[in-house]
Image (cartoon, rainbow, N blue to C red):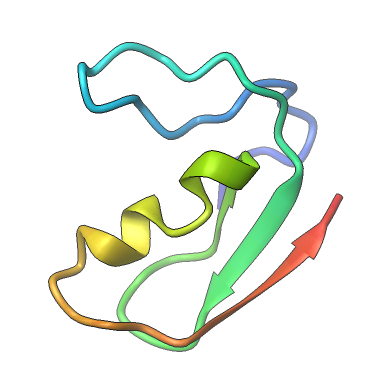
Length: 61
C-alpha cells in the first residue's frame, strides 16, 4: 500500500506526470488490485487499468 503519510496523489495523470492533488481516499479493492491511496479524480484509475470491473470500498483520510 502507498505510504499513508504522503501528501499528493500517487496516481500518474494520463500524460504520465505526477498528480498534484491532495490525497483524500484510501481505496481497498475486493480482488486482484492492491489497496492504494488516490485523490477523488483518480479513485478508480488502478481498478480501471485492471481490465474488468472490481468492487471496492473507499474511505476518506
